[in-house]
Image (cartoon, rainbow, N blue to C red; front, side):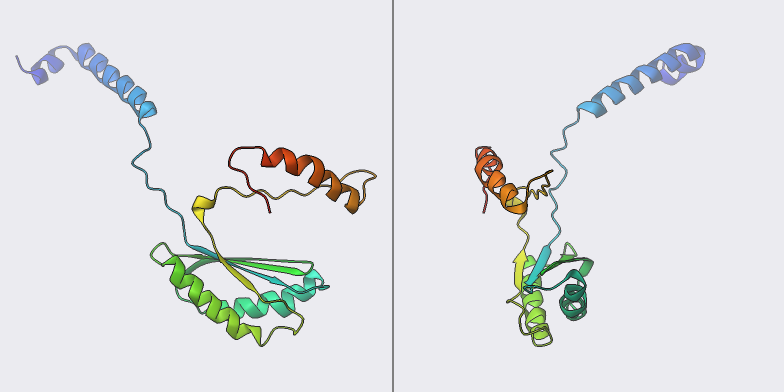
Length: 174
């Protein structure tokens, strides 16, 4: 007898067989390894600019917008983020996957050097950095404490927290 004839003659058997196959499939799906998924990192280039004594509003209008305007004409940009803080401007450029990171960083350096003449004279030389996915994680910590001033917090971080973090495997600090 053929399998199709058995399933027609015994519908309960065909339902049970279907459920068994479904259960084994669900169990197997949960145990599949993810080795075949590629490790994809988008090319990212960041620009750090420092203007001593500048307020965030000044950084935004005098530095960040000037550099962003120049960078927007670079081909292959997927996403742009910028942060203007006191004395600091950080612009992050995420490029398409097909874009070579070294070429993209070179293009960014060229555009930043063009924008340099329109920046205030007190601006320090902008730093253009490529992201390195093999570099590991990055942690930023903001601390505040009741009754502690900035000098006491800095001393606390340098004597206690920094020492403990550097003892962790694979951790390096500046």
